[in-house]
Amino acid sequence: MENFIEKMRSLNTFGKPLLISSLMIVFVATGFSAMAQQGEMQYFRPNDKRGINVFETTKNDTTSFYKLHVKVGGNFEQSFQSLKDKNTATPMTEAGFNGNVNSVEALTPGFDLAAANLNIDAQLADGIRVNLTTYLASRHHEDTWVKGGYIQFDKLLFMHSALIDHLMKSFTIKIGQFDVDYGDQHYRRTDGGNTIYNPFIENYIMDEFATEIGGELYYHDKSGLFAMGGVTNGELDPTAIAATKEDSATGQMNHYAAAFHGKLGYDKQLTKDFRFRLTGSVYTDHSANSNTLFGGDRTGSHYFYVMENAAIAKGTVLSDENDYSPFSGRLNPGFSEEVNTYMANTLLKYKGLEFFGTYENARGRTITEVSQRKATQYAADVIYRFPAEKENFWVGFRYNTVTAALQGYASNITIQREAASAGWFLTRNIMLKAEYMNQVYMGYPASNILNGGKFYGYVMEASIAF
Image (cartoon, rainbow, N blue to C red; front, side, top):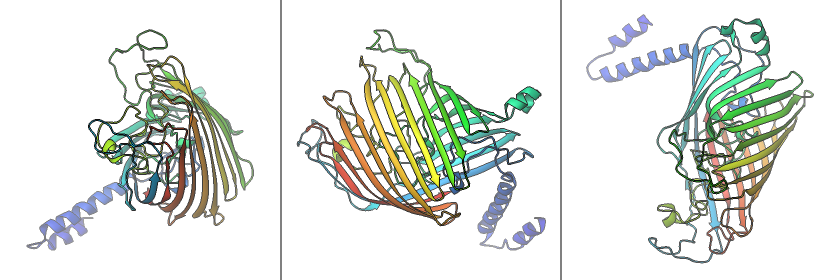
Protein backbone atom coordinates (compact mmCIF):
# COMPACT_ATOMS: atom_id res chain seq x y z
CA MET A 1 0.00 0.00 0.00
CA GLU A 2 2.84 2.42 0.95
CA ASN A 3 4.73 1.62 -2.29
CA PHE A 4 1.59 2.29 -4.30
CA ILE A 5 1.07 5.69 -2.66
CA GLU A 6 4.70 6.68 -3.28
CA LYS A 7 4.37 5.78 -6.97
CA MET A 8 1.18 7.80 -7.23
CA ARG A 9 2.89 10.79 -5.62
CA SER A 10 5.72 10.59 -8.13
CA LEU A 11 3.15 11.00 -10.91
CA ASN A 12 1.63 14.05 -9.23
CA THR A 13 3.08 16.54 -11.70
CA PHE A 14 1.63 19.91 -12.67
CA GLY A 15 -1.80 19.54 -14.20
CA LYS A 16 -2.48 16.13 -12.68
CA PRO A 17 -2.90 16.60 -8.92
CA LEU A 18 -6.71 16.40 -8.92
CA LEU A 19 -6.76 13.25 -11.04
CA ILE A 20 -4.08 11.50 -8.98
CA SER A 21 -5.67 12.52 -5.68
CA SER A 22 -9.05 11.24 -6.88
CA LEU A 23 -7.55 7.90 -7.91
CA MET A 24 -5.87 7.58 -4.52
CA ILE A 25 -9.14 8.28 -2.71
CA VAL A 26 -11.02 5.74 -4.82
CA PHE A 27 -8.34 3.12 -4.25
CA VAL A 28 -8.24 3.63 -0.48
CA ALA A 29 -12.05 3.79 -0.19
CA THR A 30 -12.38 0.59 -2.21
CA GLY A 31 -9.88 -1.12 0.03
CA PHE A 32 -11.68 -0.09 3.18
CA SER A 33 -15.02 -1.12 1.64
CA ALA A 34 -13.68 -4.56 0.78
CA MET A 35 -12.35 -5.02 4.30
CA ALA A 36 -15.64 -3.84 5.83
CA GLN A 37 -17.67 -6.27 3.76
CA GLN A 38 -15.71 -9.44 4.44
CA GLY A 39 -17.92 -12.30 5.51
CA GLU A 40 -21.52 -13.24 4.84
CA MET A 41 -24.61 -12.18 6.79
CA GLN A 42 -26.20 -14.76 9.07
CA TYR A 43 -29.84 -15.79 8.55
CA PHE A 44 -30.03 -13.47 5.56
CA ARG A 45 -31.97 -13.31 2.32
CA PRO A 46 -29.52 -12.54 -0.53
CA ASN A 47 -30.23 -9.38 -2.53
CA ASP A 48 -29.54 -11.12 -5.84
CA LYS A 49 -30.96 -14.10 -7.75
CA ARG A 50 -30.26 -16.40 -4.80
CA GLY A 51 -33.07 -14.62 -2.91
CA ILE A 52 -35.79 -15.77 -5.32
CA ASN A 53 -38.43 -17.89 -3.55
CA VAL A 54 -36.80 -17.16 -0.20
CA PHE A 55 -39.49 -16.10 2.25
CA GLU A 56 -38.92 -15.93 6.01
CA THR A 57 -35.23 -16.46 6.78
CA THR A 58 -34.55 -20.00 8.01
CA LYS A 59 -32.73 -21.23 11.12
CA ASN A 60 -29.99 -22.85 9.06
CA ASP A 61 -26.78 -21.65 10.73
CA THR A 62 -24.54 -21.89 7.67
CA THR A 63 -22.36 -18.83 8.29
CA SER A 64 -19.92 -18.43 11.17
CA PHE A 65 -19.57 -15.14 13.01
CA TYR A 66 -16.08 -13.76 13.45
CA LYS A 67 -16.50 -10.01 14.02
CA LEU A 68 -18.78 -7.08 13.36
CA HIS A 69 -19.00 -6.43 9.64
CA VAL A 70 -21.12 -4.40 7.23
CA LYS A 71 -22.57 -5.23 3.83
CA VAL A 72 -23.47 -2.32 1.54
CA GLY A 73 -25.76 -3.32 -1.31
CA GLY A 74 -28.04 -1.72 -3.83
CA ASN A 75 -30.81 -2.18 -6.37
CA PHE A 76 -31.18 -0.28 -9.65
CA GLU A 77 -33.78 -0.59 -12.38
CA GLN A 78 -34.62 1.12 -15.64
CA SER A 79 -37.69 0.33 -17.71
CA PHE A 80 -38.98 1.12 -21.19
CA GLN A 81 -42.75 1.27 -21.58
CA SER A 82 -44.99 0.97 -24.60
CA LEU A 83 -48.56 0.95 -23.27
CA LYS A 84 -51.87 2.17 -24.67
CA ASP A 85 -55.03 2.99 -22.74
CA LYS A 86 -58.66 3.82 -23.52
CA ASN A 87 -62.06 4.15 -21.83
CA THR A 88 -65.76 4.80 -22.48
CA ALA A 89 -66.46 7.27 -19.64
CA THR A 90 -68.95 10.08 -20.21
CA PRO A 91 -67.16 13.35 -21.08
CA MET A 92 -67.15 15.66 -18.07
CA THR A 93 -65.81 19.06 -17.12
CA GLU A 94 -64.59 20.12 -13.70
CA ALA A 95 -64.15 23.62 -12.31
CA GLY A 96 -60.52 24.68 -12.43
CA PHE A 97 -59.53 22.20 -15.14
CA ASN A 98 -59.52 22.49 -18.91
CA GLY A 99 -61.28 20.08 -21.24
CA ASN A 100 -62.73 16.66 -20.61
CA VAL A 101 -61.42 15.40 -17.28
CA ASN A 102 -62.62 11.90 -18.16
CA SER A 103 -60.29 11.56 -21.13
CA VAL A 104 -57.24 9.38 -20.60
CA GLU A 105 -53.78 10.79 -21.12
CA ALA A 106 -52.17 10.11 -24.50
CA LEU A 107 -49.21 7.74 -24.08
CA THR A 108 -46.11 7.21 -26.20
CA PRO A 109 -43.30 4.63 -26.03
CA GLY A 110 -40.47 5.85 -23.82
CA PHE A 111 -38.26 5.35 -20.78
CA ASP A 112 -39.76 5.60 -17.31
CA LEU A 113 -38.13 7.21 -14.30
CA ALA A 114 -35.36 4.97 -12.98
CA ALA A 115 -35.44 3.78 -9.37
CA ALA A 116 -32.71 2.85 -6.90
CA ASN A 117 -32.47 1.44 -3.38
CA LEU A 118 -29.57 1.46 -0.92
CA ASN A 119 -29.31 -1.55 1.40
CA ILE A 120 -27.09 -1.54 4.47
CA ASP A 121 -26.84 -4.69 6.60
CA ALA A 122 -24.62 -5.14 9.61
CA GLN A 123 -23.75 -8.30 11.52
CA LEU A 124 -23.51 -6.89 15.03
CA ALA A 125 -22.88 -10.11 16.92
CA ASP A 126 -23.32 -13.84 16.55
CA GLY A 127 -26.98 -14.27 15.57
CA ILE A 128 -27.79 -10.54 15.65
CA ARG A 129 -28.22 -8.61 12.41
CA VAL A 130 -29.54 -5.14 11.59
CA ASN A 131 -30.92 -3.79 8.30
CA LEU A 132 -31.49 -0.29 6.91
CA THR A 133 -33.07 0.22 3.48
CA THR A 134 -33.29 3.60 1.76
CA TYR A 135 -35.23 4.58 -1.36
CA LEU A 136 -32.74 6.76 -3.25
CA ALA A 137 -35.21 7.65 -5.99
CA SER A 138 -38.57 6.39 -7.16
CA ARG A 139 -41.73 7.52 -8.91
CA HIS A 140 -43.73 8.30 -5.77
CA HIS A 141 -40.87 9.74 -3.70
CA GLU A 142 -38.33 11.19 -6.11
CA ASP A 143 -36.10 12.36 -3.25
CA THR A 144 -34.26 10.07 -0.85
CA TRP A 145 -36.46 8.48 1.82
CA VAL A 146 -35.68 5.88 4.46
CA LYS A 147 -37.92 2.87 3.88
CA GLY A 148 -37.27 1.39 7.31
CA GLY A 149 -34.96 -0.80 9.32
CA TYR A 150 -35.04 -3.59 11.85
CA ILE A 151 -32.91 -5.72 14.13
CA GLN A 152 -33.18 -9.50 13.92
CA PHE A 153 -32.22 -11.86 16.73
CA ASP A 154 -31.55 -15.51 15.92
CA LYS A 155 -29.33 -16.01 18.95
CA LEU A 156 -29.35 -14.40 22.41
CA LEU A 157 -25.90 -15.41 23.62
CA PHE A 158 -25.65 -12.27 25.78
CA MET A 159 -28.31 -13.79 28.06
CA HIS A 160 -25.81 -16.52 29.09
CA SER A 161 -28.59 -19.09 29.41
CA ALA A 162 -28.38 -22.63 28.08
CA LEU A 163 -32.18 -22.84 28.02
CA ILE A 164 -32.54 -19.65 25.95
CA ASP A 165 -29.77 -20.79 23.62
CA HIS A 166 -31.67 -24.03 23.06
CA LEU A 167 -34.98 -22.23 22.44
CA MET A 168 -33.40 -19.81 19.97
CA LYS A 169 -32.50 -22.73 17.73
CA SER A 170 -36.18 -22.62 16.77
CA PHE A 171 -37.14 -18.95 17.29
CA THR A 172 -36.45 -15.67 15.49
CA ILE A 173 -37.23 -12.19 16.87
CA LYS A 174 -37.62 -9.17 14.59
CA ILE A 175 -38.08 -5.61 15.89
CA GLY A 176 -38.20 -2.26 14.07
CA GLN A 177 -40.03 -0.69 11.14
CA PHE A 178 -40.27 -3.38 8.50
CA ASP A 179 -42.43 -5.01 5.83
CA VAL A 180 -45.37 -6.48 7.70
CA ASP A 181 -45.23 -10.23 7.08
CA TYR A 182 -48.79 -10.54 5.84
CA GLY A 183 -49.05 -13.09 3.05
CA ASP A 184 -46.24 -14.39 0.85
CA GLN A 185 -46.62 -12.06 -2.13
CA HIS A 186 -44.66 -9.24 -0.49
CA TYR A 187 -41.59 -11.48 -0.75
CA ARG A 188 -42.04 -11.63 -4.55
CA ARG A 189 -43.07 -8.05 -5.29
CA THR A 190 -41.17 -5.18 -6.85
CA ASP A 191 -40.01 -2.65 -4.23
CA GLY A 192 -38.70 0.51 -5.85
CA GLY A 193 -35.36 -0.32 -7.43
CA ASN A 194 -35.56 -3.89 -6.14
CA THR A 195 -37.20 -5.85 -8.96
CA ILE A 196 -34.96 -8.92 -8.86
CA TYR A 197 -37.44 -11.23 -7.07
CA ASN A 198 -40.41 -10.39 -9.32
CA PRO A 199 -40.71 -12.34 -12.59
CA PHE A 200 -43.20 -9.69 -13.77
CA ILE A 201 -43.02 -5.90 -14.09
CA GLU A 202 -45.69 -4.89 -11.59
CA ASN A 203 -47.18 -6.11 -8.33
CA TYR A 204 -50.72 -7.29 -7.67
CA ILE A 205 -53.66 -5.03 -8.51
CA MET A 206 -54.45 -4.81 -4.80
CA ASP A 207 -50.89 -4.45 -3.48
CA GLU A 208 -50.70 -5.48 0.18
CA PHE A 209 -47.51 -3.89 1.47
CA ALA A 210 -46.72 -1.55 4.36
CA THR A 211 -43.86 -0.78 6.71
CA GLU A 212 -45.04 -0.45 10.31
CA ILE A 213 -43.35 -0.19 13.70
CA GLY A 214 -43.55 -3.34 15.77
CA GLY A 215 -42.21 -6.82 16.36
CA GLU A 216 -42.59 -10.36 15.04
CA LEU A 217 -41.81 -13.69 16.69
CA TYR A 218 -41.20 -16.74 14.47
CA TYR A 219 -41.17 -20.40 15.40
CA HIS A 220 -39.49 -22.83 12.98
CA ASP A 221 -39.91 -26.59 13.27
CA LYS A 222 -37.60 -29.03 11.55
CA SER A 223 -40.64 -30.76 10.06
CA GLY A 224 -41.25 -27.72 7.84
CA LEU A 225 -44.03 -26.23 9.96
CA PHE A 226 -43.62 -22.63 11.10
CA ALA A 227 -45.68 -19.96 12.81
CA MET A 228 -45.42 -16.21 13.30
CA GLY A 229 -47.20 -13.70 15.51
CA GLY A 230 -46.73 -9.96 15.23
CA VAL A 231 -47.97 -6.68 16.64
CA THR A 232 -47.46 -3.23 15.09
CA ASN A 233 -48.72 0.32 15.46
CA GLY A 234 -50.87 -0.10 12.34
CA GLU A 235 -49.42 3.05 10.78
CA LEU A 236 -46.96 3.87 8.03
CA ASP A 237 -46.61 7.43 9.35
CA PRO A 238 -46.80 7.19 13.18
CA THR A 239 -48.17 10.00 15.31
CA ALA A 240 -48.31 10.92 18.99
CA ILE A 241 -51.03 13.55 18.52
CA ALA A 242 -54.40 12.74 20.04
CA ALA A 243 -57.26 11.99 17.66
CA THR A 244 -59.69 14.80 16.80
CA LYS A 245 -62.16 12.81 14.69
CA GLU A 246 -65.15 10.74 15.73
CA ASP A 247 -65.52 7.16 14.51
CA SER A 248 -68.89 6.97 12.75
CA ALA A 249 -69.29 3.28 13.56
CA THR A 250 -68.80 3.62 17.33
CA GLY A 251 -69.79 7.23 17.95
CA GLN A 252 -66.64 7.57 20.05
CA MET A 253 -63.50 9.62 19.54
CA ASN A 254 -61.12 7.69 17.34
CA HIS A 255 -58.24 5.87 19.04
CA TYR A 256 -55.15 4.29 17.59
CA ALA A 257 -55.24 0.63 18.53
CA ALA A 258 -52.45 -1.84 17.90
CA ALA A 259 -52.63 -3.98 14.75
CA PHE A 260 -52.08 -7.73 14.96
CA HIS A 261 -51.00 -10.18 12.30
CA GLY A 262 -50.02 -13.81 12.11
CA LYS A 263 -48.98 -16.58 9.76
CA LEU A 264 -49.09 -20.35 9.89
CA GLY A 265 -47.42 -22.43 7.22
CA TYR A 266 -45.60 -25.48 5.96
CA ASP A 267 -42.57 -25.25 3.69
CA LYS A 268 -40.58 -28.34 2.75
CA GLN A 269 -38.30 -29.60 0.00
CA LEU A 270 -40.08 -32.96 -0.14
CA THR A 271 -37.77 -34.45 -2.74
CA LYS A 272 -34.75 -33.24 -4.64
CA ASP A 273 -37.06 -31.96 -7.38
CA PHE A 274 -40.24 -30.97 -5.53
CA ARG A 275 -40.87 -28.17 -3.03
CA PHE A 276 -44.23 -27.57 -1.36
CA ARG A 277 -45.24 -24.45 0.58
CA LEU A 278 -48.66 -23.55 1.96
CA THR A 279 -49.38 -20.58 4.24
CA GLY A 280 -52.31 -18.72 5.74
CA SER A 281 -51.98 -15.14 7.00
CA VAL A 282 -54.22 -12.73 8.89
CA TYR A 283 -54.02 -8.99 9.62
CA THR A 284 -56.42 -6.97 11.76
CA ASP A 285 -56.57 -3.33 12.83
CA HIS A 286 -59.79 -2.10 14.43
CA SER A 287 -58.96 1.60 14.81
CA ALA A 288 -56.27 3.56 13.04
CA ASN A 289 -55.16 7.07 12.28
CA SER A 290 -54.62 6.04 8.66
CA ASN A 291 -53.95 2.37 7.96
CA THR A 292 -52.10 1.81 4.68
CA LEU A 293 -51.84 -1.97 4.31
CA PHE A 294 -53.13 -1.62 0.73
CA GLY A 295 -51.45 1.72 0.03
CA GLY A 296 -48.17 1.74 1.92
CA ASP A 297 -45.84 1.63 -1.09
CA ARG A 298 -43.72 4.79 -1.18
CA THR A 299 -42.18 3.94 -4.56
CA GLY A 300 -45.19 3.75 -6.88
CA SER A 301 -46.42 1.59 -9.72
CA HIS A 302 -44.17 0.42 -12.55
CA TYR A 303 -46.92 1.09 -15.08
CA PHE A 304 -46.68 4.84 -15.68
CA TYR A 305 -49.58 7.26 -16.38
CA VAL A 306 -52.13 4.66 -17.48
CA MET A 307 -55.84 5.49 -17.07
CA GLU A 308 -55.08 9.04 -15.90
CA ASN A 309 -56.10 12.47 -17.09
CA ALA A 310 -53.25 14.89 -17.68
CA ALA A 311 -54.96 17.92 -16.12
CA ILE A 312 -56.23 16.07 -13.05
CA ALA A 313 -53.02 14.14 -12.48
CA LYS A 314 -51.09 17.41 -12.19
CA GLY A 315 -53.57 19.13 -9.91
CA THR A 316 -56.19 18.51 -7.27
CA VAL A 317 -57.88 15.12 -7.53
CA LEU A 318 -61.58 14.55 -8.02
CA SER A 319 -63.76 13.15 -5.23
CA ASP A 320 -62.60 9.57 -5.81
CA GLU A 321 -58.97 9.37 -4.71
CA ASN A 322 -58.66 5.86 -6.16
CA ASP A 323 -58.67 7.31 -9.66
CA TYR A 324 -55.54 9.47 -9.56
CA SER A 325 -52.31 8.62 -7.77
CA PRO A 326 -48.74 7.42 -8.32
CA PHE A 327 -50.15 3.88 -8.25
CA SER A 328 -51.35 3.56 -11.85
CA GLY A 329 -53.08 0.26 -12.50
CA ARG A 330 -53.53 -0.62 -8.82
CA LEU A 331 -56.56 -0.50 -6.53
CA ASN A 332 -56.57 0.71 -2.94
CA PRO A 333 -59.91 -0.34 -1.39
CA GLY A 334 -59.67 2.53 1.13
CA PHE A 335 -59.69 0.62 4.43
CA SER A 336 -58.00 3.41 6.35
CA GLU A 337 -59.89 3.10 9.68
CA GLU A 338 -60.49 -0.62 10.05
CA VAL A 339 -59.18 -3.61 8.15
CA ASN A 340 -59.60 -7.36 8.70
CA THR A 341 -58.03 -9.49 6.02
CA TYR A 342 -56.93 -13.04 5.29
CA MET A 343 -54.59 -14.43 2.63
CA ALA A 344 -53.74 -17.99 1.58
CA ASN A 345 -50.70 -18.72 -0.59
CA THR A 346 -49.19 -21.82 -2.10
CA LEU A 347 -45.90 -22.44 -3.87
CA LEU A 348 -45.43 -25.65 -5.85
CA LYS A 349 -42.07 -26.06 -7.55
CA TYR A 350 -41.14 -29.18 -9.51
CA LYS A 351 -37.73 -28.85 -11.09
CA GLY A 352 -38.03 -25.68 -13.20
CA LEU A 353 -41.83 -25.47 -13.18
CA GLU A 354 -43.27 -23.18 -10.53
CA PHE A 355 -46.82 -22.31 -9.47
CA PHE A 356 -47.57 -19.51 -6.99
CA GLY A 357 -51.20 -18.95 -6.03
CA THR A 358 -53.02 -16.37 -3.91
CA TYR A 359 -56.48 -16.03 -2.44
CA GLU A 360 -57.29 -12.91 -0.41
CA ASN A 361 -60.45 -11.85 1.42
CA ALA A 362 -60.33 -8.35 2.92
CA ARG A 363 -62.92 -6.30 4.78
CA GLY A 364 -62.64 -2.76 6.08
CA ARG A 365 -63.93 0.79 6.12
CA THR A 366 -63.02 4.46 6.48
CA ILE A 367 -63.74 6.51 9.62
CA THR A 368 -66.89 7.98 8.04
CA GLU A 369 -68.46 4.56 7.31
CA VAL A 370 -70.53 2.56 9.76
CA SER A 371 -70.12 -0.86 8.14
CA GLN A 372 -67.33 -2.75 6.45
CA ARG A 373 -66.94 -3.29 2.73
CA LYS A 374 -65.37 -6.30 1.07
CA ALA A 375 -62.60 -6.85 -1.47
CA THR A 376 -61.57 -10.23 -2.87
CA GLN A 377 -58.40 -10.96 -4.84
CA TYR A 378 -57.20 -14.01 -6.77
CA ALA A 379 -53.85 -14.44 -8.47
CA ALA A 380 -51.93 -17.27 -10.11
CA ASP A 381 -48.36 -17.26 -11.45
CA VAL A 382 -47.03 -20.08 -13.62
CA ILE A 383 -43.28 -19.82 -14.21
CA TYR A 384 -40.91 -22.12 -16.05
CA ARG A 385 -37.22 -21.56 -15.29
CA PHE A 386 -34.49 -23.16 -17.38
CA PRO A 387 -32.01 -24.73 -18.05
CA ALA A 388 -31.91 -27.29 -15.25
CA GLU A 389 -29.78 -26.41 -12.22
CA LYS A 390 -28.88 -22.91 -13.48
CA GLU A 391 -32.40 -21.52 -14.21
CA ASN A 392 -30.98 -18.39 -15.84
CA PHE A 393 -34.00 -17.96 -18.13
CA TRP A 394 -37.73 -18.03 -17.54
CA VAL A 395 -41.10 -17.62 -19.19
CA GLY A 396 -44.22 -16.95 -17.17
CA PHE A 397 -47.90 -16.07 -17.10
CA ARG A 398 -49.94 -14.27 -14.41
CA TYR A 399 -53.67 -13.96 -13.94
CA ASN A 400 -54.85 -11.45 -11.33
CA THR A 401 -58.36 -10.25 -10.57
CA VAL A 402 -59.95 -8.10 -7.85
CA THR A 403 -63.64 -7.58 -7.07
CA ALA A 404 -64.39 -4.86 -4.52
CA ALA A 405 -67.10 -2.71 -3.03
CA LEU A 406 -65.82 0.87 -3.05
CA GLN A 407 -67.09 3.71 -0.91
CA GLY A 408 -69.92 5.57 -2.64
CA TYR A 409 -70.38 2.98 -5.39
CA ALA A 410 -73.77 1.32 -5.86
CA SER A 411 -72.32 -2.00 -7.03
CA ASN A 412 -69.06 -3.91 -7.03
CA ILE A 413 -66.27 -3.18 -9.49
CA THR A 414 -63.87 -5.70 -11.01
CA ILE A 415 -60.35 -5.26 -12.36
CA GLN A 416 -58.66 -8.07 -14.27
CA ARG A 417 -55.11 -8.43 -15.55
CA GLU A 418 -53.24 -10.99 -17.66
CA ALA A 419 -49.48 -10.73 -18.10
CA ALA A 420 -46.94 -12.86 -19.98
CA SER A 421 -43.27 -12.43 -19.18
CA ALA A 422 -39.84 -13.65 -20.22
CA GLY A 423 -36.52 -12.99 -18.55
CA TRP A 424 -32.80 -13.64 -18.47
CA PHE A 425 -30.27 -13.53 -15.62
CA LEU A 426 -27.02 -12.54 -17.31
CA THR A 427 -25.36 -13.11 -13.95
CA ARG A 428 -26.92 -13.62 -10.55
CA ASN A 429 -26.80 -9.81 -10.11
CA ILE A 430 -28.02 -8.63 -13.55
CA MET A 431 -31.48 -9.32 -14.93
CA LEU A 432 -33.40 -8.41 -18.07
CA LYS A 433 -37.14 -9.03 -18.41
CA ALA A 434 -40.02 -8.16 -20.69
CA GLU A 435 -43.75 -8.36 -20.20
CA TYR A 436 -46.83 -8.08 -22.36
CA MET A 437 -49.95 -7.29 -20.35
CA ASN A 438 -53.64 -6.48 -20.64
CA GLN A 439 -55.81 -4.97 -17.88
CA VAL A 440 -59.54 -4.20 -17.99
CA TYR A 441 -61.94 -2.35 -15.66
CA MET A 442 -65.55 -3.46 -15.21
CA GLY A 443 -68.47 -2.12 -13.21
CA TYR A 444 -67.38 1.51 -12.89
CA PRO A 445 -70.13 4.12 -13.38
CA ALA A 446 -70.27 6.04 -16.65
CA SER A 447 -69.14 9.24 -14.90
CA ASN A 448 -65.88 7.62 -13.73
CA ILE A 449 -62.75 7.79 -15.87
CA LEU A 450 -62.25 4.05 -15.38
CA ASN A 451 -65.59 3.20 -17.01
CA GLY A 452 -64.83 0.76 -19.83
CA GLY A 453 -61.15 1.25 -19.05
CA LYS A 454 -58.42 -0.84 -20.59
CA PHE A 455 -54.65 -0.58 -20.98
CA TYR A 456 -52.31 -2.98 -22.69
CA GLY A 457 -48.88 -3.29 -24.27
CA TYR A 458 -45.35 -4.23 -23.29
CA VAL A 459 -42.73 -3.09 -20.78
CA MET A 460 -39.03 -4.03 -20.73
CA GLU A 461 -36.82 -3.68 -17.69
CA ALA A 462 -33.16 -4.02 -16.73
CA SER A 463 -32.31 -4.60 -13.09
CA ILE A 464 -29.15 -4.87 -10.99
CA ALA A 465 -28.98 -6.17 -7.43
CA PHE A 466 -26.03 -6.79 -5.13
